[in-house]
Length: 130
Ligand SMILES: [Zn+2]
Image 1 (cartoon, rainbow, N blue to C red):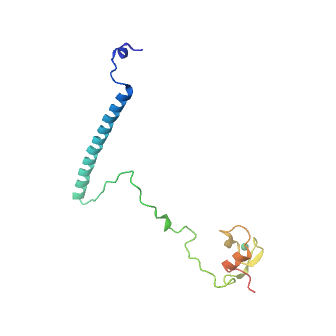
Image 2: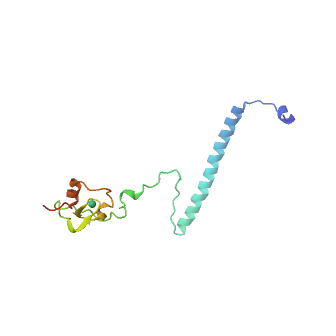
Image 3: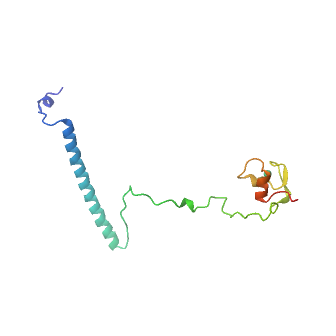
């Protein structure tokens, strides 16, 4: 133990000291923030006079929502054309090894793995014509 430490008379508990220091710290931070804000505001004002309009935004402010809902994913830009009949997209010259039937090819399976069900064939318009 250091001698000098023992000689210092403790009149306040450490938690009291800590609270006081915390209050001082909070006050100092608030004052420092105000000081910086004033400096920035003044600088922004000078920029404005030069023709550059800037706004100060606090970092914790909610960011602008991403426009992801309006973005079209790659490869799906073409609007889906609903088949007019269960066989309207049937292409007799094509043969699919996955489904082991004619009427479409592997390209139809880019988003669908495995063989199509008869219902899916009808929805895609690639059902064999009657
Ligand atoms: Zn197929």
